[in-house]
Amino acid sequence: MSATPVRPPGAPVIGVVGSAGAYGVWLRRFFEECMGLRVLGHDPADPQSDPSERLLDEAEVLVFAAPIRHTPALIADYAARSAGRERGRLWLDITSLKQAPVEAMLASQAEVVGLHPMTAPLKTPTLKGRVVVVCEARLDAWRPWLQHLLDALQGEYVRTTPAHHDRVMAAVQAMVHAAHLGQAGALRGLAAELGGPAALMPFRSVAFEMDAAVIARILALNPEIYEDIQFGNPHAGEALARLGEEIERMRALVSRGDEGARAEFRRHFLDANREAWGETATAEGSYTFERVGYLLADLTETRRLSVHLPEDRAGSLRALLAVFEARGISLSSIHSSRTPAGEVHFRIGFDAGADVARLRAAAEEIDRSGVGRVLERP
Image 1 (cartoon, rainbow, N blue to C red):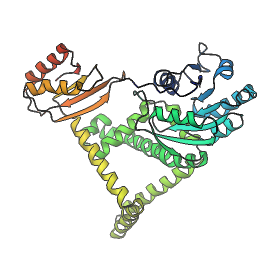
Image 2 (image 1 turned 180 degrees about the vertical axis):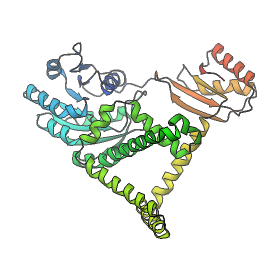
Image 3 (image 1 turned 180 degrees about the horizontal axis):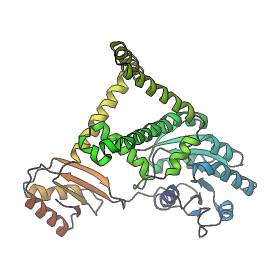
Image 4 (image 1 turned 45 degrees about the horizontal axis):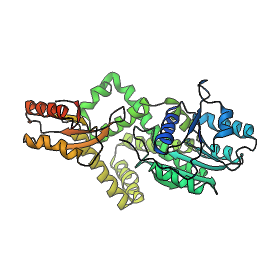
């Protein structure tokens, strides 16, 4: 699915430092394809990339997309070598921590904004629907262009200071990741008795399946990121200590096991937390859990088709559904997602009793007619 180019006034040259990394690759494609801009890219690990001096000479917007632990020193090196050439330009970073990178950029004479997309690089062309934290540290002439950039990214934006960002990330990232990695370690220790994830999944609850998915996601991505989120955030230790205290308190109550312990458990872990969470947040969160549960249930359907619609136009989905209507095939669910290659496809589920021969005939017609390309057949 293509994105409509957004061309800001002036169409500045973009320099991406760390362009061979996952986010660097995504950013280059975004700036080139979605914003129609010329992009230079340098990566210290890629001798074939553009020289850093070229970025300092030509890039009017410089974006740092390097590993967390190396970013402040890398920015400091660029500021020293730029030696005033950055005056009147815009420097950005997209690191998961903000205070140290932003302070390093402020040592330059460029305008400075820290960005933190709260997601790993996506298969989608933009960050539509994803949260992006914005830390405006020094911004004047580039403010209109920054707004063009944010409009093109299509994210959901929250603005804060670098210091507050890092404190929040200790809870939103460091503590959450630690809890899931702790679960993974505990389950690993029980594997000899209970089996690994594959043996446990048949017994899954919705909550266990969601937690297992988060654990798997963490383990599947770049381990350096998760290491730096823990060791690079000066507030992570405090968050982990508080988490550890709460777990230890619960363990002690469960070990006591008497009615007094049960009463304290209810007061501290249920009643007090429910009050702190608030009625609205509790209700909305519970509803979100239900919706995810319905989605997970849909994904277990054994009668299903996955179809890519090659033509991104009004009426394409209607033409696809008409194939099933003509054969009297009822759908039980339909969801859109993306393939690993980034193509939008629809996963269509049918009742367990649906006739497989009719479904296969429908799949053949979809392929033959060009309405879509079947990726997964019943």
